[in-house]
Image 1 (cartoon, rainbow, N blue to C red):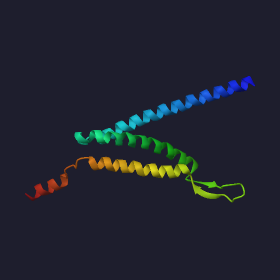
Image 2 (image 1 turned 135 degrees about the horizontal axis):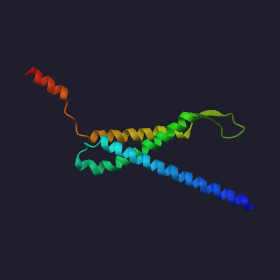
Image 3 (image 1 turned 90 degrees about the horizontal axis):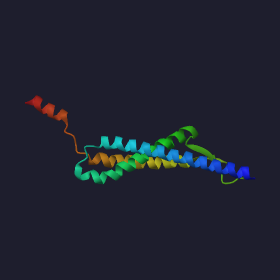
Image 4 (image 1 turned 180 degrees about the vertical axis):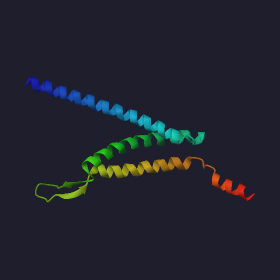
Length: 135
């Protein structure tokens, strides 16, 4: 009995270490994605940067979660057979991870739109060259 308890404790400890490593990796990936987004949105006016900081962090987190969910969906599919009980005939339903993916993807897209809308408009070089051609 004692060896089973030790083995169980070891497995729990090992599982905890693996989860901690996954969390550390996720945090590193979020940091990298945050830096990427900050570079993409570096032209946001200074008076808006504090406002957008939270959006960038949230977008980075969502991007990493979406990537993880995408792996799960590609490996296991969007749908699964499901039944409420053994007596019921199973039916196909959308997996919860697929629903969450769609919801989070919508949130991610909305955040990127918000960030893009804050960017100053770039001058349209094609209009300027057309005008100079006319002169």
